[in-house]
Image (tube, rainbow, N blue to C red; front, side, top):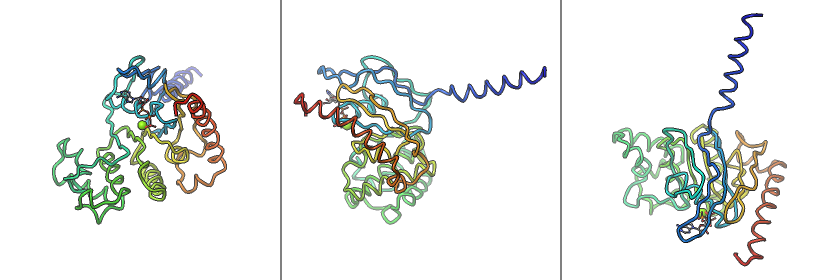
Length: 275
Ligand SMILES: Nc1ncnc2c1ncn2[C@@H]1O[C@H](COP(=O)(O)OP(=O)(O)OP(=O)(O)O)[C@@H](O)[C@H]1O
Ligand SMILES: [Mg+2]
């Protein structure tokens, strides 16, 4: 019995280490007030563990973009702090692809790698791999104006993922697309996640179904100043195909639950004449 105790302690310590692994990102009671006096965020606390995909939904103007910009270091917090694990590399995808119009698809995709010193050969190989994954093989040498909106967003996504970021920030990346292309992009993103190609993600959207389909967890924000009012990890999340998730009763229950929360917030804004 005398040697069993240290063994148990080692196991317990290892288990505690796993349990206590710090999150990749921690927002700690942050508030953001812009210089014009608009308070965008109030008291937001959120831990994002490694490899988790988190969707953020909430009424227009509640501070979703502000939250991403704070994490990207583009906005200062007025209160609280943001803790990011050392050496964390971020990449961002916006509503519009924001591609470089003078660069080919291949050069757009490999831009981040080129900036980091990759050779032309490495850049070309990476661009080819990402074009294969994104179904853009035939378009590798064309320019952004020759692409549809959906294709441009695929290039934008590929450009972000080609740098192998630790966390991918997406700000309504599919909002400007037509409904069918949007569904295809949601499935593409789910497939990329299933292949382990985009681990940790912070995904801002207005679409509740999209939030549930692309992420493991959905965080709902109040109207401005944004606070977190619901933090939901549905049990269907993770590892399922988007078209399967849409058919689940639990998906519809989660959708209704989130919509009731947002509706309350938006209705209150309407009554106050803010919307
Ligand atoms: N640079 C800025 N200066 C002043 N006010 C700003 C600035 N950026 C955003 N705001 C205001 O802060 C609030 C939150 O803006 P933010 O863009 O973060 O909201 P959002 O949730 O992303 O909105 P949407 O859903 O419409 O994209 C809004 O009232 C907005 O007008
Ligand atoms: Mg926004």
